[in-house]
Length: 92
Image (cartoon, rainbow, N blue to C red; front, side, top):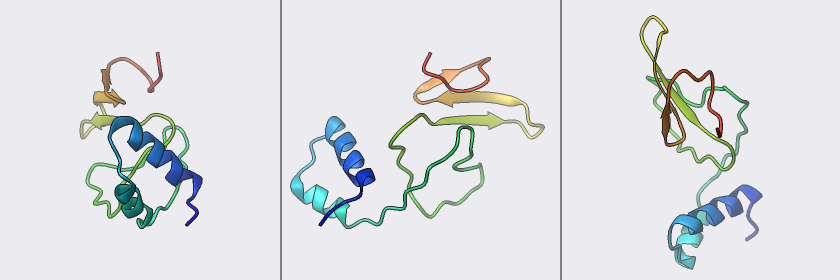
């Protein structure tokens, strides 16, 4: 069975962090994949959402912010880093 490029990227990234048997790859090959591209600063999930899907980021960075009820920034995470006083996530 031929797989979409996004599936091949997923398998390559999983193999980079864990051993992945051919039987594991076969199981993953049966999972339905819906690919969506997001624009910079576009929300993937918002607090209170109840997602019915799992998300895998194949390319780029993802960040999370926590706001007070008044919209004041409490914290911001970019990848595995907590940052302060930064307008957006960056590699720097």
